[in-house]
Image (tube, rainbow, N blue to C red; front, side, top):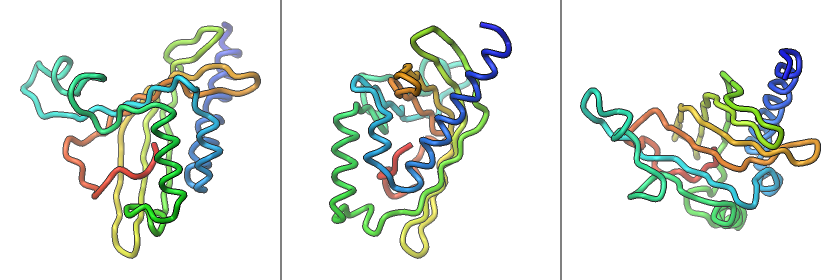
Length: 173
């Protein structure tokens, strides 16, 4: 891949991620679900405070072992969307006002079929009159080519806190 081709691919990926963020911010959750591969893995480990030198092996919980904030697939995310869209979801009635920001987008691995993308995120949530939450972290996405666009095949989110300061995690990242 030439430098120009890589730059154009990076621009295409960035536009995809920004469009995805807009769908979530505009509460177009069903359209967002269309961006998810049928075999999606959506994972956010719980972070722990550990002694120096143990970060690589013990700081984050592992997928399929123990507990995590999210260890979901497209089916469970679809059910979460359906629940929110009933209008009687206790944590999302009324719906939160949410802004997703994506930055520091990097292409980590490129093959003809898929791209592994690293980025940083900031998600701001405002609930009712006075609840404000900020989620900051990094994520690694595996995007799979789908015609002229992409599907999210895997999303691993690393939240930069080990204690959840929000009352719940009812929003989508």
